[in-house]
Length: 477
Image (cartoon, rainbow, N blue to C red; front, side, top):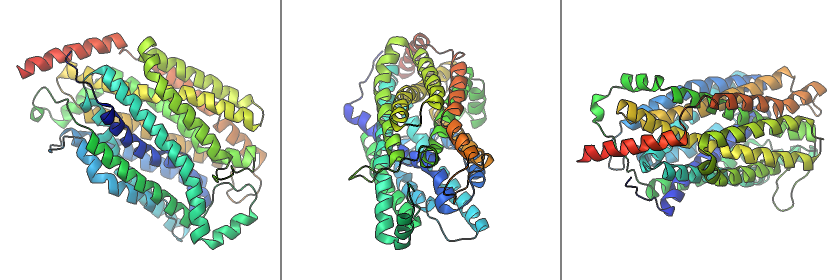
């Protein structure tokens, strides 16, 4: 194969895009339920239903964005222009979503549905083309695996930065611009995150400014190289969708990815409640403003990052499928063990690190396997529907987070979570405990079983890549 090596600068530039996306995605996944119940002022059940409705239809909007990006023609390529067009709207909608107006209960629900839905739309318009860019930068499976690793490494770095900055910034803006919030906070013991509406909108807005810079650098430092072999005008949207729905490996990977993301969504959504209500460690690290929840998140992201960085070398030795299955199996076993450990911060942080280490192997392998499916479908159909296939991966991601966040809100409601209660009931504490341990373990089992049926081994992927290279050479001749 005639392979063009991708420079370090371009790999870093590609990674910047997911650093930006992950900064907001972690805010949505780990803080939004708490924001809507304890800051915005709606019930856990209402917030859970809103997450499901908004993300469910938006998940299918991802497919539309994938189709549009596949057919985009510009001097910048098919996918890169979206980074330029939607970087600023992405940041603006983030701040608007975390603004808490003083409306009636019904008015708040309407505002939440509209702003959250619009935020997810803008997220799709920038993140689906960004994900598709992986399949357009290089045709070499090894380079794509490397790009995927850089992407996920920077995703976790972005998440890490969010965890380091968000709580201190919310506290800073709360103290600076919201004296009423300061007075309330001084009376609360172990309150954790600030509930100042001013602090939240300004804190999230500041993260958005960083995202704009990272998206623009990603746009500037990357290049699209892989082009369609055959004429695109001869393929209809209906045919693209038909090809996709007949792609068995795609179905398996979407289902497996959905289960893996459910694992993260349920576990992450309940963490703030678990630490405040169950663990009850009233501690802030000197000089940072981090409470134990933030430290827990940071430990997890550090472990995730290590997992992402070593995943390419491990998968190169044992294969993507086998590495994925081993990692998700151990994550499930350790999540089950999390239920039985003592209520002691040392045990909790130790298990968080090891679980997150194995979970860190999973996501870069998922994205790399979706790129393999693009090649698989191109070889069979002659059509390289990169945007459509990568939009499906985004769809599974959003469905996973939608179901996970909705389940978290509903389960908290079932276990009678009360936002204003000083002490949650034993029933609520039990619910929070199983949500951070046993429920994620079940998701791991589902992901493991799904991957058993995935047919594209590393050997098969290499054969597909070589056959496509021959076809491309003939097309150019």
